[in-house]
Length: 319
Image (cartoon, rainbow, N blue to C red; front, side):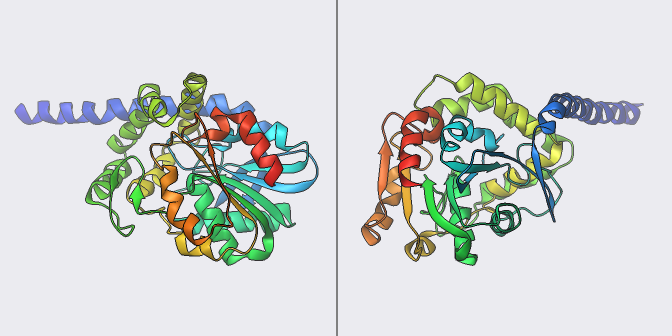
């Protein structure tokens, strides 16, 4: 009798979160059906990449950062302005937004390959890049592999300039931490890991981090709502790149690479960026004083949303 009760309780403990996960993903996928109809699609070898194209002129590629619920929507306040002088491409990286979320091993090299393949097969012309966070780091790496594809790089608070793991735990020499390994293993479990992912991408948790990452509180509600939605589109595999991110699997050290870049480069930081402060660029600034560093006042980790008009002017002048 005791065993039957225990088995029943275990079955309920598994079935309830599994059903909740299924219903949550189904709801958000239904909402995304009409959104997908407006997208352009690049059929990449690892999955379909959804992107938008707008404007005319010199090509410009926008690459978003990596975080819970990340997508090209990060650039929503910039695309229209930039499209007056450029043909603007904004993509959802594999595993994010409305792009496919396959069960592959996510890595810095995977995203570097995606950027180069997109530049060659979709844009098919020399392109300038504006990218933020990890997207900026991968843009630098993409240039290292295929420099002929790129004209200019505008990097917003790029990752990879120091040895740290945003939002989890500092470590030295870009080595994964024990905490990161535990977080990855938990997220990768089928039912409870998915439930944990849905918790991390819930509106209250996203709001907690947004309030600490943004200097401007206006627009946080919209940001939280969209990120929570994008995290659930495409199913539970959206947790896989984030699991690698927490364990350091998406890290790349761009310090030496950035010193060797031969095309025009500009750095931009929000003065209130807590996760990746502008001080992280100091060593690079001493070795490459020709690379301009612009610090945007009253902005946090996403200055191109918080101070869109200021950033649009900065990007238009440089790009």
